[in-house]
Amino acid sequence: MKHLLMAVSGPSGVGKGTIVKTLIGRRADVVESVSCTTRAPRSGETHGKEYFFLTKEEFTTRLENDDFLEYDEHFGNYYGTPKSFVEETLKTKSVILEIDVVGALRVKEKFPETALVMIVPPSVEELENRLKGRGSETEAEIENRLARLSFELAQQDKYDYVIVNDDLERAIGEVEAILDGAYRK
Ligand code: 5GP
Image (tube, rainbow, N blue to C red; front, side):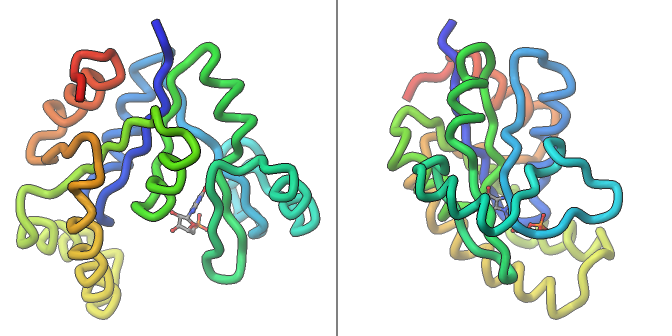
């Protein structure tokens, strides 16, 4: 069976991380891509697990060698999706990128066969409650995330699949069905 490159996006707090991590824990034939970054590792982070930690020079060299499907700058550091890692892994497994809308659309430009999957909340109110319930963000951060939400949701029609996360198991099942080729666009 042909292996699939899938980019999973969705607003913060929508549960995309849980969906992706649960699915990967269950399936030996699917892995999550490991990005490269120039930021320093946080305590507990390992090279090759959370990220490939590179110096600015190493990142620039790889950029010049066209080894990123996409890259961006966040908080003064560079982050990129490594093309060689994704291409090598795709020979034996499907690869999931958990990536924002802008990054996902850039990947699709370079790799048109990428399946773009957006996870959306059942309603904006529901997501607002979920974000507040997490208790990990301040009021201002929640406002910020909600403002970004409308931008992200507005990009839905550029996506190949939109999955409503009102039921975790059903949402995981839908992502698996896409990976297994059960849905065709
Ligand atoms: P952190 O440093 O907290 O792990 O991540 C900071 C930001 O970088 C997050 O918004 C995360 O989504 C983003 N990020 C992580 N990896 C990549 C990547 O490969 N490409 C892009 N464009 N952004 C990334």
